[in-house]
Image (cartoon, rainbow, N blue to C red):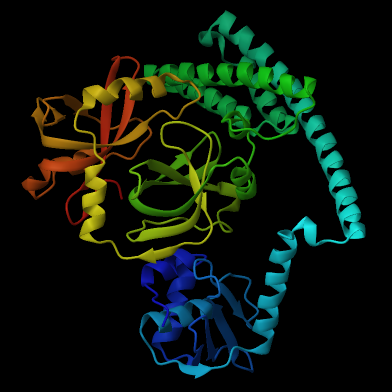
Length: 489
Protein backbone atom coordinates (compact mmCIF):
# COMPACT_ATOMS: atom_id res chain seq x y z
CA UNK A 1 0.00 0.00 0.00
CA UNK A 2 0.94 3.64 -0.41
CA UNK A 3 2.61 4.97 2.73
CA UNK A 4 0.67 8.02 3.92
CA UNK A 5 1.44 10.05 7.06
CA UNK A 6 -0.72 12.60 8.87
CA UNK A 7 1.89 15.23 8.03
CA UNK A 8 1.39 14.55 4.33
CA UNK A 9 -2.37 14.83 4.73
CA UNK A 10 -2.06 18.18 6.51
CA UNK A 11 0.27 19.45 3.77
CA UNK A 12 -2.31 18.53 1.11
CA UNK A 13 -5.36 19.91 2.95
CA UNK A 14 -6.64 23.31 1.76
CA UNK A 15 -7.03 24.35 5.41
CA UNK A 16 -6.86 22.81 8.92
CA UNK A 17 -10.66 22.61 9.17
CA UNK A 18 -10.90 20.43 6.05
CA UNK A 19 -8.28 18.07 7.50
CA UNK A 20 -10.13 17.90 10.82
CA UNK A 21 -13.41 17.16 9.04
CA UNK A 22 -11.74 14.45 6.98
CA UNK A 23 -10.30 12.84 10.08
CA UNK A 24 -13.72 12.94 11.73
CA UNK A 25 -15.34 11.18 8.76
CA UNK A 26 -12.71 8.45 8.82
CA UNK A 27 -12.83 7.92 12.59
CA UNK A 28 -16.64 7.78 12.64
CA UNK A 29 -16.83 5.00 10.05
CA UNK A 30 -18.06 7.16 7.20
CA UNK A 31 -16.88 4.79 4.44
CA UNK A 32 -19.17 2.12 3.11
CA UNK A 33 -16.38 0.52 1.11
CA UNK A 34 -12.64 0.89 0.47
CA UNK A 35 -10.87 -0.36 -2.65
CA UNK A 36 -7.48 -0.15 -4.32
CA UNK A 37 -5.89 -1.30 -7.54
CA UNK A 38 -3.50 -4.22 -7.50
CA UNK A 39 -0.59 -2.01 -8.59
CA UNK A 40 -1.25 0.45 -5.72
CA UNK A 41 -1.68 3.43 -8.06
CA UNK A 42 -5.39 3.94 -7.42
CA UNK A 43 -7.43 4.14 -4.21
CA UNK A 44 -11.18 4.64 -3.99
CA UNK A 45 -13.83 4.87 -1.29
CA UNK A 46 -17.60 5.12 -1.11
CA UNK A 47 -18.49 7.59 1.60
CA UNK A 48 -21.85 8.47 3.13
CA UNK A 49 -22.62 12.18 3.12
CA UNK A 50 -25.38 14.75 3.31
CA UNK A 51 -26.66 13.93 -0.19
CA UNK A 52 -29.15 11.23 -1.17
CA UNK A 53 -26.41 9.11 -2.74
CA UNK A 54 -23.04 8.16 -1.33
CA UNK A 55 -20.02 10.07 -2.60
CA UNK A 56 -17.30 8.34 -4.58
CA UNK A 57 -13.87 9.72 -3.77
CA UNK A 58 -10.52 8.58 -5.17
CA UNK A 59 -6.77 9.18 -5.07
CA UNK A 60 -4.81 8.50 -8.26
CA UNK A 61 -1.10 7.84 -7.66
CA UNK A 62 -0.05 7.29 -11.28
CA UNK A 63 2.40 10.14 -10.49
CA UNK A 64 3.36 9.37 -6.90
CA UNK A 65 4.84 12.81 -6.29
CA UNK A 66 1.65 14.56 -7.41
CA UNK A 67 -1.45 12.46 -6.64
CA UNK A 68 -4.75 13.48 -8.22
CA UNK A 69 -7.87 13.59 -6.03
CA UNK A 70 -11.43 13.34 -7.33
CA UNK A 71 -14.77 13.29 -5.56
CA UNK A 72 -18.42 13.31 -6.64
CA UNK A 73 -19.40 15.72 -3.84
CA UNK A 74 -20.26 19.37 -4.71
CA UNK A 75 -17.49 20.87 -2.54
CA UNK A 76 -15.26 23.53 -4.09
CA UNK A 77 -12.39 22.71 -1.76
CA UNK A 78 -9.55 20.71 -3.22
CA UNK A 79 -8.88 18.12 -1.97
CA UNK A 80 -12.29 17.94 -0.29
CA UNK A 81 -12.88 16.50 3.18
CA UNK A 82 -13.92 13.14 1.67
CA UNK A 83 -10.63 12.85 -0.22
CA UNK A 84 -8.76 13.69 2.98
CA UNK A 85 -10.84 11.12 4.86
CA UNK A 86 -9.74 8.51 2.31
CA UNK A 87 -6.12 9.43 3.02
CA UNK A 88 -6.71 9.05 6.75
CA UNK A 89 -8.07 5.57 6.09
CA UNK A 90 -4.90 4.77 4.15
CA UNK A 91 -2.71 6.21 6.92
CA UNK A 92 -4.55 4.05 9.46
CA UNK A 93 -3.70 0.92 7.49
CA UNK A 94 -7.34 0.00 6.85
CA UNK A 95 -8.14 -2.97 4.60
CA UNK A 96 -8.75 -2.05 0.97
CA UNK A 97 -10.21 -4.75 -1.27
CA UNK A 98 -8.60 -5.16 -4.69
CA UNK A 99 -10.50 -3.64 -7.61
CA UNK A 100 -9.98 -2.89 -11.27
CA UNK A 101 -9.15 0.70 -12.16
CA UNK A 102 -12.42 2.32 -13.37
CA UNK A 103 -12.73 2.94 -17.10
CA UNK A 104 -13.23 6.69 -16.69
CA UNK A 105 -9.98 6.94 -14.70
CA UNK A 106 -8.11 5.03 -17.41
CA UNK A 107 -9.51 7.41 -20.04
CA UNK A 108 -8.48 10.45 -17.99
CA UNK A 109 -4.98 9.04 -17.63
CA UNK A 110 -4.82 8.41 -21.39
CA UNK A 111 -5.96 11.94 -22.18
CA UNK A 112 -3.32 13.42 -19.90
CA UNK A 113 -0.64 11.20 -21.39
CA UNK A 114 -1.74 12.24 -24.89
CA UNK A 115 -1.51 15.91 -23.92
CA UNK A 116 1.96 15.39 -22.47
CA UNK A 117 3.10 13.47 -25.55
CA UNK A 118 1.69 16.11 -27.87
CA UNK A 119 3.52 18.83 -25.97
CA UNK A 120 6.75 16.87 -26.30
CA UNK A 121 6.08 15.68 -29.86
CA UNK A 122 9.17 15.25 -31.98
CA UNK A 123 8.96 17.53 -35.06
CA UNK A 124 10.53 14.74 -37.14
CA UNK A 125 7.42 12.62 -36.61
CA UNK A 126 5.11 15.32 -38.04
CA UNK A 127 3.92 15.55 -41.63
CA UNK A 128 5.06 18.57 -43.72
CA UNK A 129 1.58 20.10 -43.38
CA UNK A 130 1.60 19.64 -39.60
CA UNK A 131 5.06 21.17 -39.37
CA UNK A 132 4.03 24.21 -41.41
CA UNK A 133 0.85 24.71 -39.43
CA UNK A 134 2.70 24.38 -36.12
CA UNK A 135 5.42 26.77 -37.26
CA UNK A 136 2.91 29.45 -38.32
CA UNK A 137 1.00 29.12 -35.07
CA UNK A 138 4.20 29.36 -33.06
CA UNK A 139 5.44 32.39 -35.02
CA UNK A 140 2.14 34.24 -34.66
CA UNK A 141 2.01 33.52 -30.96
CA UNK A 142 5.62 34.62 -30.46
CA UNK A 143 5.07 37.86 -32.38
CA UNK A 144 1.96 38.72 -30.38
CA UNK A 145 3.71 37.94 -27.10
CA UNK A 146 6.75 40.03 -28.07
CA UNK A 147 4.59 43.04 -28.98
CA UNK A 148 2.71 42.83 -25.70
CA UNK A 149 5.92 42.41 -23.72
CA UNK A 150 7.60 45.43 -25.35
CA UNK A 151 4.51 47.53 -24.68
CA UNK A 152 4.60 46.50 -21.02
CA UNK A 153 8.33 47.27 -20.72
CA UNK A 154 7.85 50.76 -22.16
CA UNK A 155 5.08 51.40 -19.65
CA UNK A 156 7.35 50.20 -16.83
CA UNK A 157 10.08 52.61 -17.97
CA UNK A 158 7.57 55.49 -17.78
CA UNK A 159 6.73 54.53 -14.20
CA UNK A 160 10.40 54.21 -13.26
CA UNK A 161 11.17 57.66 -14.68
CA UNK A 162 8.35 59.15 -12.63
CA UNK A 163 9.61 57.39 -9.50
CA UNK A 164 13.20 58.45 -10.21
CA UNK A 165 12.17 62.09 -10.44
CA UNK A 166 10.36 62.11 -7.11
CA UNK A 167 13.08 60.12 -5.34
CA UNK A 168 15.74 62.52 -6.65
CA UNK A 169 13.77 65.46 -5.25
CA UNK A 170 13.43 63.68 -1.92
CA UNK A 171 17.15 62.86 -1.70
CA UNK A 172 18.01 66.49 -2.48
CA UNK A 173 15.58 67.88 0.08
CA UNK A 174 16.24 65.21 2.73
CA UNK A 175 13.96 62.67 4.40
CA UNK A 176 13.12 65.20 7.09
CA UNK A 177 11.01 67.12 4.56
CA UNK A 178 8.85 64.07 3.84
CA UNK A 179 5.66 64.93 5.65
CA UNK A 180 2.22 66.40 5.15
CA UNK A 181 1.75 67.26 1.48
CA UNK A 182 4.84 65.30 0.43
CA UNK A 183 3.50 62.09 1.99
CA UNK A 184 0.23 62.61 0.16
CA UNK A 185 2.11 63.01 -3.12
CA UNK A 186 4.04 59.81 -2.53
CA UNK A 187 0.86 57.95 -1.61
CA UNK A 188 -0.70 59.01 -4.91
CA UNK A 189 2.41 57.87 -6.79
CA UNK A 190 2.30 54.53 -5.01
CA UNK A 191 -1.23 53.92 -6.27
CA UNK A 192 -0.20 54.93 -9.80
CA UNK A 193 2.70 52.47 -9.91
CA UNK A 194 0.22 49.62 -10.13
CA UNK A 195 -0.88 51.00 -13.53
CA UNK A 196 2.76 50.93 -14.62
CA UNK A 197 3.18 47.21 -13.82
CA UNK A 198 5.57 48.01 -10.98
CA UNK A 199 4.31 46.25 -7.83
CA UNK A 200 7.89 45.83 -6.59
CA UNK A 201 8.76 49.56 -6.47
CA UNK A 202 5.20 50.19 -5.27
CA UNK A 203 5.78 47.98 -2.23
CA UNK A 204 9.09 49.71 -1.44
CA UNK A 205 7.48 53.13 -1.70
CA UNK A 206 4.72 51.99 0.66
CA UNK A 207 7.40 50.81 3.07
CA UNK A 208 9.11 54.19 2.93
CA UNK A 209 5.84 55.99 3.63
CA UNK A 210 5.09 53.70 6.59
CA UNK A 211 8.50 54.25 8.20
CA UNK A 212 8.35 58.03 7.86
CA UNK A 213 4.76 58.11 9.14
CA UNK A 214 5.75 56.05 12.17
CA UNK A 215 8.83 58.23 12.77
CA UNK A 216 6.62 61.31 12.87
CA UNK A 217 4.39 59.60 15.45
CA UNK A 218 6.95 58.32 17.95
CA UNK A 219 10.25 59.94 16.93
CA UNK A 220 12.12 56.63 17.21
CA UNK A 221 15.37 56.81 15.22
CA UNK A 222 15.01 53.19 14.10
CA UNK A 223 12.19 54.21 11.75
CA UNK A 224 14.34 56.90 10.20
CA UNK A 225 17.19 54.42 9.74
CA UNK A 226 14.80 51.88 8.20
CA UNK A 227 13.51 54.57 5.84
CA UNK A 228 17.04 55.24 4.63
CA UNK A 229 17.54 51.53 3.89
CA UNK A 230 14.26 51.34 1.97
CA UNK A 231 15.08 54.50 0.04
CA UNK A 232 18.52 53.14 -0.85
CA UNK A 233 17.00 49.91 -2.19
CA UNK A 234 14.30 51.80 -4.10
CA UNK A 235 16.90 54.09 -5.68
CA UNK A 236 19.11 51.19 -6.74
CA UNK A 237 16.15 49.25 -8.11
CA UNK A 238 14.93 52.21 -10.14
CA UNK A 239 18.37 52.99 -11.60
CA UNK A 240 19.35 49.40 -12.44
CA UNK A 241 15.91 48.45 -13.75
CA UNK A 242 15.56 51.51 -15.93
CA UNK A 243 18.93 50.86 -17.57
CA UNK A 244 18.16 47.15 -17.99
CA UNK A 245 14.70 47.72 -19.52
CA UNK A 246 15.87 50.51 -21.85
CA UNK A 247 18.50 48.16 -23.25
CA UNK A 248 15.86 45.50 -23.87
CA UNK A 249 13.67 48.01 -25.77
CA UNK A 250 16.59 49.20 -27.89
CA UNK A 251 17.49 45.63 -28.80
CA UNK A 252 13.82 44.53 -28.99
CA UNK A 253 14.82 41.69 -26.72
CA UNK A 254 11.97 40.46 -24.53
CA UNK A 255 13.56 37.18 -23.46
CA UNK A 256 13.59 36.52 -19.73
CA UNK A 257 17.05 36.41 -18.16
CA UNK A 258 18.71 35.06 -15.04
CA UNK A 259 18.38 38.28 -13.04
CA UNK A 260 16.71 39.24 -9.77
CA UNK A 261 15.44 42.47 -11.38
CA UNK A 262 12.50 40.67 -12.98
CA UNK A 263 11.07 39.56 -9.65
CA UNK A 264 12.10 42.75 -7.83
CA UNK A 265 10.00 44.74 -10.29
CA UNK A 266 7.07 42.50 -9.45
CA UNK A 267 7.32 39.81 -12.11
CA UNK A 268 6.12 36.31 -11.22
CA UNK A 269 8.22 33.43 -12.51
CA UNK A 270 6.54 30.39 -14.03
CA UNK A 271 8.20 27.08 -13.25
CA UNK A 272 8.55 26.41 -16.98
CA UNK A 273 10.41 29.71 -17.42
CA UNK A 274 12.85 28.88 -14.64
CA UNK A 275 13.44 25.47 -16.21
CA UNK A 276 14.17 27.07 -19.60
CA UNK A 277 16.80 29.25 -17.89
CA UNK A 278 18.51 26.14 -16.54
CA UNK A 279 17.42 26.79 -12.96
CA UNK A 280 16.13 23.24 -12.48
CA UNK A 281 17.68 20.56 -10.27
CA UNK A 282 16.68 16.94 -10.34
CA UNK A 283 16.12 14.56 -7.44
CA UNK A 284 16.73 16.99 -4.59
CA UNK A 285 16.27 15.94 -0.97
CA UNK A 286 15.13 18.80 1.22
CA UNK A 287 14.98 19.12 5.00
CA UNK A 288 13.17 22.10 6.51
CA UNK A 289 15.37 23.53 9.24
CA UNK A 290 13.24 26.50 10.29
CA UNK A 291 9.83 28.04 9.67
CA UNK A 292 8.28 31.38 10.61
CA UNK A 293 5.47 33.73 9.59
CA UNK A 294 5.79 37.50 9.21
CA UNK A 295 3.37 40.24 8.26
CA UNK A 296 4.47 42.59 5.50
CA UNK A 297 2.69 45.86 6.21
CA UNK A 298 3.88 47.52 3.00
CA UNK A 299 2.65 44.65 0.85
CA UNK A 300 -0.45 43.96 2.97
CA UNK A 301 0.35 40.27 3.09
CA UNK A 302 1.52 37.45 5.33
CA UNK A 303 4.68 35.62 4.32
CA UNK A 304 5.25 32.00 5.37
CA UNK A 305 9.01 31.48 5.26
CA UNK A 306 10.78 28.13 5.38
CA UNK A 307 14.53 27.52 5.33
CA UNK A 308 15.49 24.25 3.63
CA UNK A 309 18.81 22.49 3.29
CA UNK A 310 19.60 20.33 0.29
CA UNK A 311 20.75 17.15 1.98
CA UNK A 312 22.92 16.27 -1.03
CA UNK A 313 24.81 19.56 -1.38
CA UNK A 314 24.44 21.43 1.91
CA UNK A 315 23.02 24.53 0.19
CA UNK A 316 20.47 26.56 2.14
CA UNK A 317 17.37 27.79 0.33
CA UNK A 318 14.27 29.79 1.19
CA UNK A 319 10.70 28.87 0.34
CA UNK A 320 8.07 31.62 0.51
CA UNK A 321 4.30 31.40 0.52
CA UNK A 322 2.68 34.81 0.01
CA UNK A 323 -0.81 35.32 1.44
CA UNK A 324 -2.30 38.76 0.62
CA UNK A 325 -4.82 39.93 3.21
CA UNK A 326 -7.46 40.21 0.49
CA UNK A 327 -7.03 36.54 -0.41
CA UNK A 328 -6.52 34.87 2.96
CA UNK A 329 -9.58 32.64 2.60
CA UNK A 330 -8.28 31.30 -0.71
CA UNK A 331 -4.62 30.68 0.12
CA UNK A 332 -3.68 28.06 2.67
CA UNK A 333 -1.03 28.87 5.27
CA UNK A 334 2.10 26.76 5.07
CA UNK A 335 3.22 24.78 8.11
CA UNK A 336 6.29 23.22 9.65
CA UNK A 337 7.61 20.18 7.77
CA UNK A 338 9.39 17.47 9.76
CA UNK A 339 9.95 14.93 6.98
CA UNK A 340 12.49 14.85 4.16
CA UNK A 341 10.92 16.00 0.89
CA UNK A 342 12.18 14.05 -2.11
CA UNK A 343 11.63 16.46 -5.01
CA UNK A 344 11.93 15.20 -8.61
CA UNK A 345 12.28 18.74 -10.00
CA UNK A 346 13.44 21.66 -7.87
CA UNK A 347 13.30 25.18 -9.35
CA UNK A 348 15.73 27.81 -8.06
CA UNK A 349 15.06 31.52 -8.51
CA UNK A 350 17.80 33.97 -9.57
CA UNK A 351 19.64 35.53 -6.66
CA UNK A 352 22.53 35.05 -4.27
CA UNK A 353 22.72 34.20 -0.59
CA UNK A 354 19.84 31.79 0.04
CA UNK A 355 17.95 31.61 -3.28
CA UNK A 356 14.22 31.07 -3.31
CA UNK A 357 12.97 27.64 -4.39
CA UNK A 358 9.71 26.13 -5.60
CA UNK A 359 8.52 22.71 -6.65
CA UNK A 360 5.43 20.78 -7.61
CA UNK A 361 5.01 17.35 -6.15
CA UNK A 362 7.22 15.63 -3.60
CA UNK A 363 7.43 12.32 -1.78
CA UNK A 364 7.88 12.63 1.99
CA UNK A 365 9.95 10.20 4.03
CA UNK A 366 10.90 10.04 7.69
CA UNK A 367 14.19 11.62 8.76
CA UNK A 368 17.04 9.34 9.84
CA UNK A 369 20.19 9.82 11.98
CA UNK A 370 22.15 9.84 8.72
CA UNK A 371 20.18 12.91 7.59
CA UNK A 372 21.09 14.87 10.72
CA UNK A 373 24.74 13.79 10.48
CA UNK A 374 24.82 14.90 6.84
CA UNK A 375 23.41 18.33 7.68
CA UNK A 376 25.89 18.77 10.54
CA UNK A 377 28.77 17.98 8.19
CA UNK A 378 27.97 21.08 6.11
CA UNK A 379 28.40 23.54 9.01
CA UNK A 380 31.15 26.16 8.86
CA UNK A 381 33.96 25.64 11.38
CA UNK A 382 35.15 29.26 11.38
CA UNK A 383 33.04 32.42 11.22
CA UNK A 384 35.95 34.67 10.22
CA UNK A 385 36.53 32.77 6.96
CA UNK A 386 32.87 33.15 5.95
CA UNK A 387 32.21 36.64 7.34
CA UNK A 388 33.67 38.47 4.34
CA UNK A 389 31.46 36.60 1.88
CA UNK A 390 28.38 37.17 4.05
CA UNK A 391 29.12 40.90 4.35
CA UNK A 392 29.62 41.21 0.59
CA UNK A 393 26.20 39.67 -0.01
CA UNK A 394 24.55 41.92 2.59
CA UNK A 395 26.19 45.03 1.11
CA UNK A 396 24.16 44.57 -2.07
CA UNK A 397 21.09 46.81 -1.63
CA UNK A 398 19.09 44.39 -3.80
CA UNK A 399 19.84 41.38 -1.59
CA UNK A 400 17.77 40.05 1.30
CA UNK A 401 18.65 41.73 4.64
CA UNK A 402 19.95 38.48 6.13
CA UNK A 403 21.94 35.42 5.09
CA UNK A 404 21.27 32.05 6.70
CA UNK A 405 24.16 29.72 7.50
CA UNK A 406 25.12 26.66 9.55
CA UNK A 407 27.74 27.10 12.31
CA UNK A 408 29.46 24.32 14.24
CA UNK A 409 29.96 25.80 17.70
CA UNK A 410 32.02 24.85 20.71
CA UNK A 411 29.73 26.62 23.15
CA UNK A 412 27.09 29.31 23.59
CA UNK A 413 27.45 31.37 26.73
CA UNK A 414 26.66 34.71 28.34
CA UNK A 415 28.72 37.86 28.05
CA UNK A 416 27.01 40.49 30.17
CA UNK A 417 23.39 40.59 29.02
CA UNK A 418 24.24 39.06 25.66
CA UNK A 419 24.60 35.52 24.40
CA UNK A 420 27.77 34.79 22.44
CA UNK A 421 28.53 31.84 20.19
CA UNK A 422 32.11 30.56 20.11
CA UNK A 423 33.51 28.10 17.57
CA UNK A 424 36.27 25.59 18.20
CA UNK A 425 38.59 27.91 16.28
CA UNK A 426 37.92 30.61 18.89
CA UNK A 427 35.75 32.86 16.67
CA UNK A 428 32.94 34.64 18.48
CA UNK A 429 29.73 36.33 17.38
CA UNK A 430 26.93 38.00 19.34
CA UNK A 431 23.50 36.36 19.11
CA UNK A 432 20.79 38.97 18.85
CA UNK A 433 17.27 39.16 17.43
CA UNK A 434 16.93 40.98 14.15
CA UNK A 435 14.26 43.67 13.99
CA UNK A 436 11.19 42.46 12.14
CA UNK A 437 11.81 38.82 13.01
CA UNK A 438 10.10 36.81 15.71
CA UNK A 439 12.31 36.78 18.81
CA UNK A 440 14.30 33.61 19.41
CA UNK A 441 17.22 34.56 21.69
CA UNK A 442 14.91 34.39 24.72
CA UNK A 443 14.12 30.77 23.86
CA UNK A 444 17.80 29.93 23.72
CA UNK A 445 18.24 31.38 27.21
CA UNK A 446 15.64 29.08 28.76
CA UNK A 447 16.60 25.78 27.12
CA UNK A 448 16.38 23.18 29.91
CA UNK A 449 19.07 20.91 28.41
CA UNK A 450 22.47 22.61 28.85
CA UNK A 451 24.16 20.03 26.62
CA UNK A 452 22.45 21.72 23.64
CA UNK A 453 24.67 24.75 24.24
CA UNK A 454 27.85 22.79 23.57
CA UNK A 455 29.31 21.11 20.48
CA UNK A 456 26.25 21.29 18.25
CA UNK A 457 25.34 22.99 14.98
CA UNK A 458 23.28 26.18 14.79
CA UNK A 459 21.22 27.50 11.91
CA UNK A 460 21.64 31.27 12.22
CA UNK A 461 20.43 34.34 10.34
CA UNK A 462 23.40 36.69 9.85
CA UNK A 463 22.60 40.39 9.51
CA UNK A 464 24.54 43.64 9.55
CA UNK A 465 23.61 46.35 12.06
CA UNK A 466 24.24 49.65 10.33
CA UNK A 467 24.36 51.80 13.46
CA UNK A 468 26.69 49.51 15.41
CA UNK A 469 28.57 48.52 12.26
CA UNK A 470 28.72 44.93 13.36
CA UNK A 471 27.66 41.53 12.09
CA UNK A 472 25.19 39.75 14.36
CA UNK A 473 23.48 36.37 14.18
CA UNK A 474 19.95 35.44 15.22
CA UNK A 475 19.66 31.80 16.35
CA UNK A 476 16.96 29.84 14.51
CA UNK A 477 17.50 26.11 15.05
CA UNK A 478 19.92 23.78 16.84
CA UNK A 479 20.78 20.65 14.85
CA UNK A 480 21.86 17.66 16.95
CA UNK A 481 22.72 14.13 15.91
CA UNK A 482 19.08 13.03 16.11
CA UNK A 483 16.77 16.05 16.15
CA UNK A 484 16.04 19.68 15.33
CA UNK A 485 15.48 22.08 18.22
CA UNK A 486 13.54 24.93 16.61
CA UNK A 487 13.79 28.28 18.36
CA UNK A 488 11.12 29.86 16.13
CA UNK A 489 7.65 28.37 16.23
